[in-house]
Length: 353
Image (cartoon, rainbow, N blue to C red; front, side, top):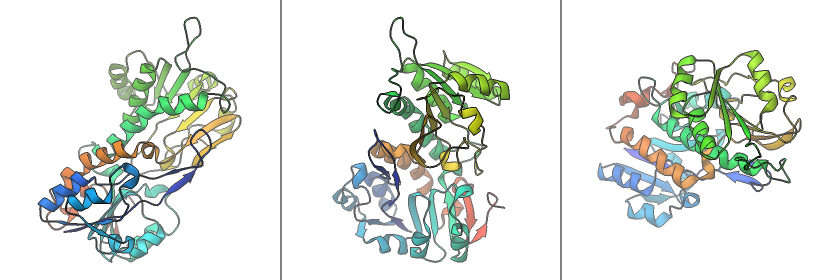
C-alpha cells in the first residue's frame, strides 16, 4: 500500500511562560516505523520536514526507505494518510478520492463542513482516539499518559510569579503543599494524580464511577478519592490551587461540569488545566489557548503532548504500528482500526450516526 506522512501545520497562540505559540511537532511515524512498513513491501511518502520538530531529519526517513516528496504528494499519493491532528478543509482537498485518513479526529467538535467534505470525497476517517478493542484504546492511552505526566510541569510553571500567585507545588517544612483537584479518574486523571503526588502536592481525585476510583486508589496511593456531586464540586473547587479537567466520553463532546459561577469561587491566581479541551472542554470558560479569565489561569491546549514531540512521536509509532503491520490491502480489514472509523468510504460510521 501507499502511505502518506505529511507535516503538521497546526499552531496555537499561547502566552508566557510558553512563548507566543505552540506548534504541533508530532509525527505519526518515526523513521523506524517507516522502516518496518517498507520491509513489508509498502511505500511511504514523507513530506520534507515532517519530522524535524520531533528531531527526525529527512535523511533518517530517506535511510529508512521513505520517498521524500512535496506536501501535495504526501496527501495525494497516499492510499492511507497518517496525520496527528484531524485534517483541515484545505487538507481534505489534497486527499485522493476514496483514501483513508487517520488522525486524532475528535469530530464532535470539528469545524463546520469538515465531515461533509470528507464524505463527499468518499474518504474513510479513522480516529486514533477510538482505535482498539474491548474498551482498550492504546493510542489514546499513550497520549493521555503523556499529558498526565506533564501536568505537574505545566502547573508548576503557571503557579510561578508573575503569571501565578508564586506557589511551590510541594511546599516546604511548615508550609503546606499546593492542593490539586483532578476531575476524572481515567488514564489521564490517574497519571496526573501519580505525577502530582510524586511532585509533593496534595491530590484529590473525583469521578462519578466508584469502580474508577477504586482502581485509582491502587495506582495513586495517597490521593483522596471522592464521588463527584454538586456539593463536592463547590467545596473542592473553592480550595484548589490547581484544577485538572480529565473527563472524557469517547467520540462525544465532554460534559461541561464547571460553570462560570462555580469557577468564580476559585482563589485568584489558581490554575485550570483543561485537558478535555480537544473534546470541547470541561468548563464554560474554556477555549483553546493559554489565558486568564475570572482571575484564573486557563491552560487549554488541545495538543499537550506536542510539548514533548519526540517522546510523543515514539509513543504514537509504538501503539499504531502493530495495527498497520497487520494490513494487507485495506486498513478497515483490521478490526481495531475499523473500530475507530467515523466514516467508511464516505458513509457515516457508528460514531457519527
